[in-house]
Length: 45
Image 1: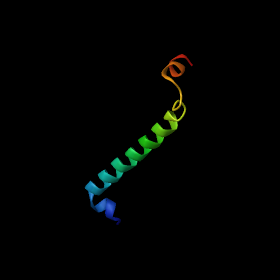
Image 2: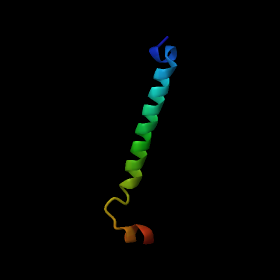
Image 3: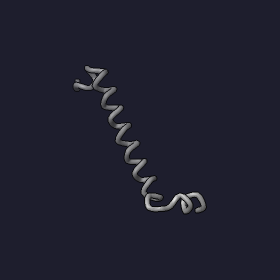
Image 4: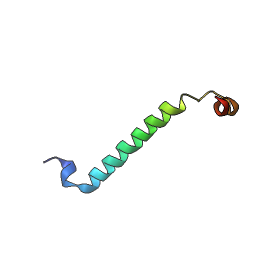
């Protein structure tokens, strides 16, 4: 039995950390497409 299954709080913290990292990676990937564009270029493209 691993330590995650014995401590539900640890599993919750791990899940939250994984969700945070996934969100960070997705935001970076999507934001890089428009990072250096002006608001006008983003709006009209």
